[in-house]
Length: 80
Image (cartoon, rainbow, N blue to C red; front, side):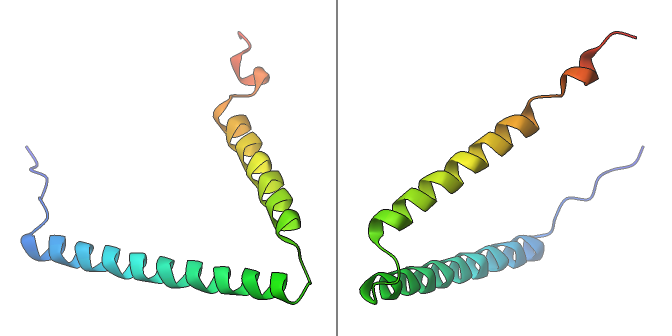
């Protein structure tokens, strides 16, 4: 019988540290993106309405892609 090795306490600490780093990176990425969008709107390059429409379109496209990915193709269920 092979016993699975459980993670050590140190491995848990390292994982928690990596997660904290990812959260910090995510925060800074979102902050930078927000600042860029505000500047584009302030300079008149984009409007808030354009951004909202594009975000809605991208979200819809992503939802469709995920739904298609989750739904098996009809050819996969044909009896042999």
